[in-house]
Image (cartoon, rainbow, N blue to C red; front, side, top):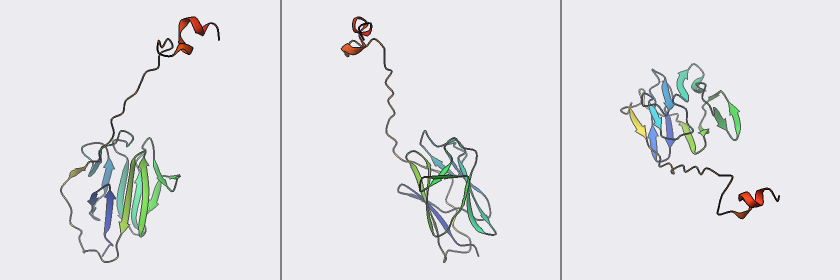
Amino acid sequence: MPPALTIHYGSATYTPNPARATTIGRAPDCDLVIHNPYVSHHHARVTFTDDGWLLEDMGSANGLSINGIHTTSVLLLNSTKVTLAQGATIVCIVGTNGPATPAQPPRGTLQQTWPSLHYRRRHRHNRHNPRNSRRNRHAQ
């Protein structure tokens, strides 16, 4: 009987099925969909192996990070905090007294409110900044 795994992201929780791989990412076909622009479409995969629960990077742009150290895979023990990308951290808790077959929630979306990203384009000739005006640019 495999130990139960619970993945926490924000206020949402997810219990993977040990009989199949669970994908985490931004794409709608992932088991755990995380709406964060820094999370790759297919970011990571969780599988149950002979050694226990394994979290693997799927070639994502930002990879996986534990305590600031980048890694490609991690064997999940007890409670593990994994950063997928900026603003996207999951907490994986392995229990010892889980049910024989963990309940598989319906495929869904884990939604976290993500602040709007506003990018300002900086102009060389900004009329609000005298240092960048055409007249003063040549004087510098």
